[in-house]
Amino acid sequence: MKLRVAATAIGVAAVALFAASPANAQVAAQRYDHQDPYKSGCGNAARSVKSGKIISRANGQVGTIKLMWSGKCQTNWIEIRTATSANGIISVYAADGRSDRFSFKAGNGGRHWGNMIRAKNMCAWGSASVQWNGGRGGQYGSGTTAKACD
Image 1 (cartoon, rainbow, N blue to C red):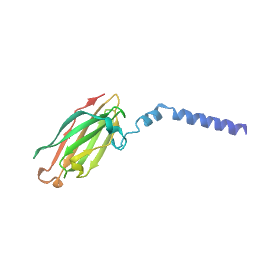
Image 2: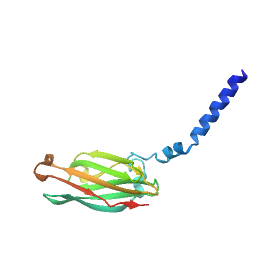
Image 3: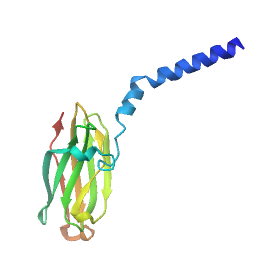
Image 4: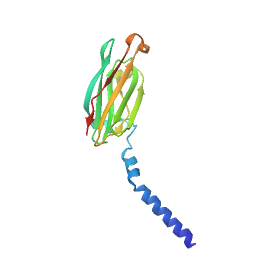
């Protein structure tokens, strides 16, 4: 019986030690990674920190791209405005190698955003590619933001 009590006590101590480990704390701190900024509430007080143009070689500027920052959630994501008929991919990157890639469909008045990644105390940036009419005849464009470093 004493052996079972000792084994249980050791198991409880190991679980408590794991729960307090730095790796587990990092996972908890990145709970907003790959989440929608507006469904999570992080987008409510966000601001644009970098912006750029979405350019089509055949059509010139076809939209804008913004790198957003939420101080509340310590996250970045990308928002774009483009033609309502466009679909495409929005990506955001953090300097530590994490990223998120989000596909969007036509609609929503041409306003689209991707998911978030935590980027406190590091640089982040993003990109977007869009196409309409199946991309035929030069009906596509892309854009990036400069890096923003917190």
